Image (cartoon, rainbow, N blue to C red; front, side, top):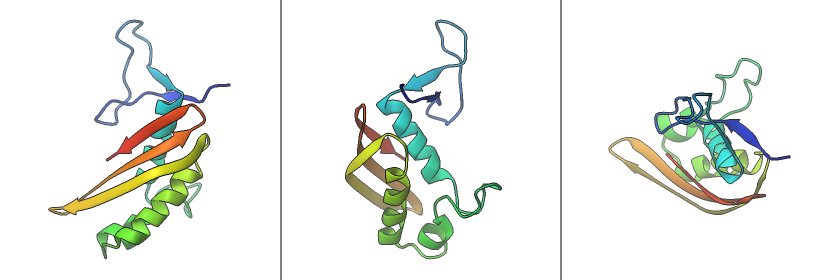
Amino acid sequence: MTITTIAENSNRDIYRDPVTGNLAFVSGAYAIAQLCKSRIEAQRGEMIYAADEGMPTRATAWDLFNPKQFEAAARVIILATDGVTSITSFNMSSLNNVLSYTAVINTIYGTATITS
C-alpha cells in the first residue's frame, strides 16, 4: 500500500488537479515529506485531541530562540512520521526573525526534501 495524502500547493492550500478537475493527491516520498512539514508546523497545544503533540515552537523559537532544541524536536517529529527511515541532514537559519529549515529525509520510497 502506498502512502497518499491530499496535495498542497506552495501556499499550503489544497487544489484541484488541472487535468481531471478532482481534488489533487500526492503519494510516495513527496507525500511523506508533506506530512512531515505539516507535523512540524503543528504547534504544541493547538490540536484539541492531541494537545501534548506538535512542535514546542514557543519554547524553541518564539520566546527564546534555541536552535538545538528546535532541531531536536523537529527530528523527533520527522522520525515519528510513517514511512520515514532516517534523516540525512537538517539545516536551519534565522534571518530577520524568520526561521527557515531544510531537512533531507530518507523514506521507504526514496529521498525527499522538506523546506520552510
